[in-house]
Length: 537
Image (cartoon, rainbow, N blue to C red; front, side, top):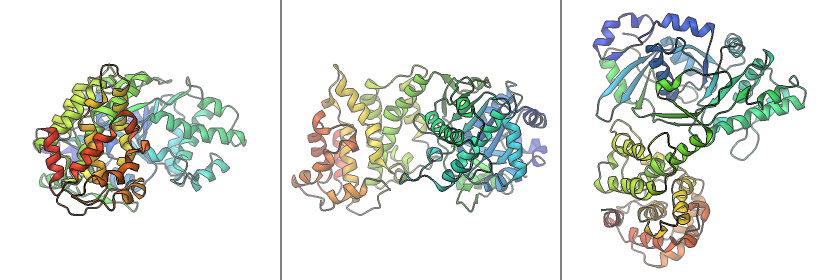
């Protein structure tokens, strides 16, 4: 059995093996989409295939939509050439249920796949044709937060961006330069309206996309490289909008167990490929069952009825509240707590940590007891229900191979938001007291213990990358397990660094608590587990 149009003709064989197939006339869908495209998506990776493409498939199955998606890949063209094209734009979604079952779906909602390659005339001409269509309502993006930046890590403008700003919209080199050149095509076709929707997992993502697009439009018009009015078109929300969104769904790299399952089912060519840009891509995507996408409802050319597929539409303020709920209370802090202590206790899987009654209770206490009293309630979803899903379905899911070592990356950059906002809310409250917080300061102490790079058995381990390590690691380098109060003086510069915590620990009255916890955590081998047990259970 092959995953392509010809292979799907053996419908009964697929269904007998438990696969859910597209329940619509795919040929007609492709014809309709090419004739009058509604939605083009940039970024052909796993999150798109597991989430947006599956939502559209469900709406096609239900007859809500008669057109599917066009996808465009702008970073790694081999994803299209080596995975989408050979499989006729079909993919298999393996949904890992918390119950232990795997739901297998053949997703066929993608009508057309293209590369954002200005050297590929056929593909680029087709993109220009799509952007000239009256019917096009939305261009969405999952290109990672880094994808919206016009500068490198040192703040220097990327050479490709610099060249595009100088040369104008013809034959752009940079990803965003090409995207803006396509938007210029739409402007030339009659300044037609469209929504540019970032669906990347970063704060105020619509603003990041707008800033990049606006920079190109402003510079090009200033230099006379585009017709007058393009800059005004970009800045007219009745013409081009940049809604905020919040997305949440875990889609790890293709898992070997899924590959083996497909091979057992007789699916040919199920092996992943690694592209020359080191992208790991397979004919299948594995993902958790939970998913959330909340979008600011600002679409100047209308939009598909995606709310019927579970996507939520609301105002900008509510999107912001949903994001803060997730990042500051209901998910990200729990992940970070597990990451810090998971590394210290030798865990390699987050799901395994949730089988430890102490760690399980720790994240529940941080979420329900310490976080919920000050949660930013968005109104369109229940914060408690969100935490319920996190602790019952998501992080305990044995099929989601997420590691504490991965989540521990850049922890110093995460602490101010993931915990600092809760501490600030307690400090502002007339009814709550910062001194009542027990486990959030324990996580703070746990992170200082973590940067010693010595686990609870006294063995060295490798720290995950973090830009603050060169500054903080020397401060704990001489601290040894069993050291006494002298260790507190050594970590005082860390305790005083409000850049790490988001608050002044001394000012809010947590510095002594964190310091005392730290002393208990370094008392000797086994002290991390003993301290957790003492304060959590």
